[in-house]
Amino acid sequence: MSLPLEGKVAVVTGASRGIGRTDALVLAAAGADVVVTDILIEDDERLEETSEKIGPVAQVMAYSKKVYTRSTAEEIKKMGRRSAAFRMDVTDKKEVHDVMAQIKEQFGRIDILVNNAGTLDHTARFEHQNDAFWERDLRVNLTGAYNCCQAVWPYMKEQRWGRIINMSSVAGTLGGFGQASYATTKAGLLGLTRTLALEGARYNITVNAIIPGIINTEAFQMTNPEMRERMIARTAFKRPGEPEDIAHAIAFLASDQAGYITGIGLPVAGGIDLFTF
Ligand SMILES: NC(=O)c1ccc[n+]([C@@H]2O[C@H](COP(=O)([O-])OP(=O)(O)OC[C@H]3O[C@@H](n4cnc5c(N)ncnc54)[C@H](O)[C@@H]3O)[C@@H](O)[C@H]2O)c1
Image (cartoon, rainbow, N blue to C red; front, side):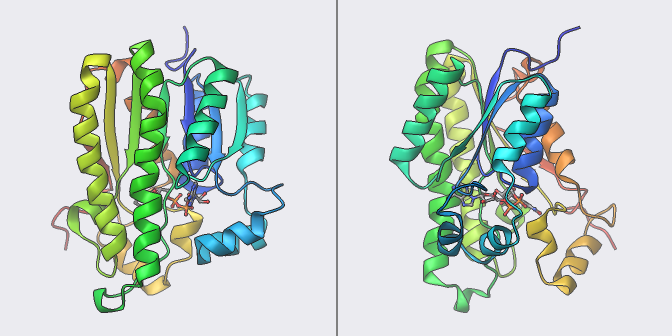
């Protein structure tokens, strides 16, 4: 029996670690050829300089050598799939269009786009919202997804098949204390998702969002421990989700079997929005 994503080409953004890296591996295990992209690449001579521009989590990851963009692509090749790693800053429209064109040239098509790149490291009450982080969060989380969707849209339209999956957050649906900029971008992504779902249907392009709760990634582990405990206590399971929980939902939404599902925000949140006490 063939694997559900055999013959498909997927691009994952922000895949140097965490959820994005796991998405890439799970999509490959489901049969797809997967292109691993991130602004951080382990052998890039600009790595440390770039990480300083992004923010505190990126800096820690770069300096502690926890950047796995190229090694994830190598892992995928060992699984027998085609793969490649590309430096792609989602905020740089020209770079996004150039990289997507190179992927299309090299892999022949782009079927699946996972807009995962995101920034999760600015938490401050609204009166202390930092202007530079407000701009950065909008640029990476929202404009970044917009840039990537625009770049792949003509390819998906031409081949009359496409799957776009955007990473929202419960911060976008429920609000997030101290997360004004982040929550705003994650709510905005739901508007983009529904609008592109309406416009993409005629070309057989589905556009959906995942709404993760709290997921046990390196970025989550770097949050304040007391805050982390309070967040975990809000889930029905009393534990965070794992990156695989997100990746399996993405693999399903990317499959032919999910062809009639579009415009949804799928919570993968362990019941964080339920009335637990
Ligand atoms: N971990 C959670 O609890 C959680 C909850 C809800 C939503 N999410 C969302 O899931 C996604 C991944 O989360 P994570 O915990 O793995 O985060 P993470 O910080 O570990 O990963 C984010 C990735 O995005 C990359 N990135 C940052 N700026 C970029 C840019 N300009 N261009 C390209 N790549 C860039 C980073 O280098 C990193 O690899 C994010 O969109 C996040 O908002 C995560």
